[in-house]
Image 1 (cartoon, helix red, strand yellow):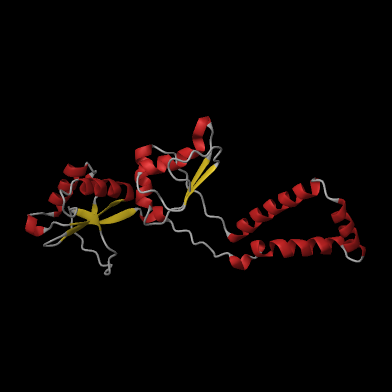
Image 2: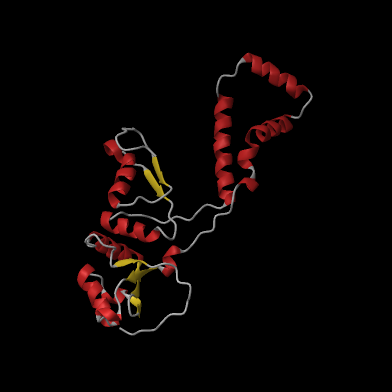
Length: 233
């Protein structure tokens, strides 16, 4: 990835192997494909943990991001074969030194042309076309669950009820109360669940307003116990 300050022209593709930390960095990266009125393609690989950040970037930048399916191994091999075919056709169409033509004639005197070409392709491209070199990628439907669990460093000792907790989050961040679900209230802390996009907005708000202390709301650690406590708001 090109660093800031480097002016590289004619960039057609930008590939993000990790999602940028903020919208400004994302815009700066993908903007390299649009210099001087040109167009290009930006591809971003996203893990389930990063998806909520992507939805936040999408909302703030009003970007028309499109989800695409990951290619299967057969697709990768087919694409590589097409590239190899184009490379070989370009070589065949170029001017060949007479020395190599004579060498080829000698080689073909006692060998079948198809066998010779196959042997050369195998020798040069075998590693690229070896299906065993590629691991199958498992696609995760990160949009299906679509929620982030948040930890709130307040509980019953702070005179909270589930309803008051939801109202507190709404008042501070403007989050629609209908999006705040799975409210769990304990003596010293609480948990809530919200859609990825809203979670990022909530977390950003409390990071900016922590007053030198740990934010009141943070992303919850993975739950060891799947049993939920049903508390009506």
